[in-house]
Length: 344
View 1 (cartoon, rainbow, N blue to C red):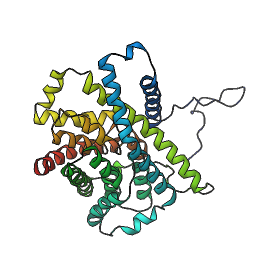
View 2: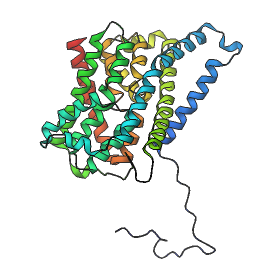
View 3: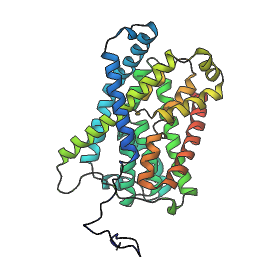
View 4: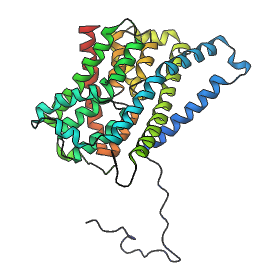
């Protein structure tokens, strides 16, 4: 049993009433979400507002690209967040545990395949994975599901098919590369992972006693949609800027090299943190880059980005997040190149 916190030894409590706790800043994911949502509001004002300074051809092109990306992705983002909130509110975590084989090595591919039929956004997959571990699911299987659920679910694959019309090979390549990354990381954890690297911290997921499931669904959907919608707008702004404002010579420097283009878009995916239901539309707009480089953008983004590292740090501990995210990024780039070379 933990002891109650009190004044440090040798220092009496201040007189005149109880001590006031210093205000605790919101966690990094929440602050990132607020920044993203503020970007959504500002972008909406820019897109809908008037003014002569918006009449220049470059800004009109920027506005057109930004709106096109956001509007194309919005229905898939909406559907994905609805399904994610429904799974978190109505599906008990023990359902996943009972469906997995007892052998951890066999549980890894089953957990990876579960991501194909159980949609979930990146924000929801981290706490769900933590809940699965606390209920006895092997860490390797839970981490495999964490990576596969936001990367290969039906909403993401359908959005990819819409973003790349007439290119079914891109959908196949994304499915194969993402599943390969999730399963390789699960098996790597079985081989080299250490239990002491995981520092599971309490976090409420699924149904909580005393709360209506529909209320949990509403709150989950509201959080995920506003959070992911803000990041979608940030991604659309960045993609439009790359297409309009960045000098062609700079893009050609990266796009002209097979390796530099893959590494550049992989790093861009980590920084932009676009929701997996919408990242295909951002990737499709980067027409100056090779199909393999754009595949790397779509494979790396749902598995490693700034908000995911922050979420993993809060759920599993910072040491785990650094190791796991670094290894995942390396494996994701390698699988993207291999699958891109074979399929695209």
